[in-house]
Picture (cartoon, rainbow, N blue to C red):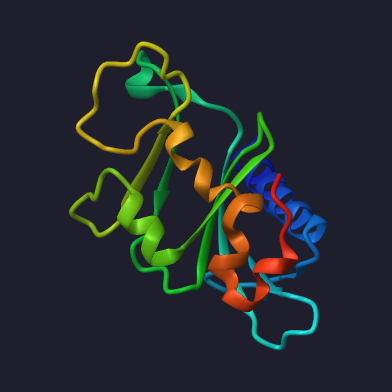
Length: 160
């Protein structure tokens, strides 16, 4: 798949999972800094989401353990960031500030590199307290998005 196809599939995956939890979604207008606008039924408040997708885990550093990694643009001022793994249909969702905080690397140009190692069995200790994909289980869309979107929306989501 091309990068364009991967990104589009990621957006569609996020939309599908949000719809399955009763959250309405709209595509962002062309040229917007975000990809989706969401609302819970009966709520007028909207939230913006930037979606970043990966087709599958790749070897870290080209030869290391399998990992997913996303470069999160530091200048993004939207509400939420969703990252996806198309190979497992997983979606993690964070409020923007939390995504930047949980990223393990912060290059000088202001971006944030979020990494999830998917091949962790037997892994030696990492200098990062959360590096394995299992450390991010709490951020899977079905597990916590309601609280991130708006505390009054929490009942809209079902645990996956």
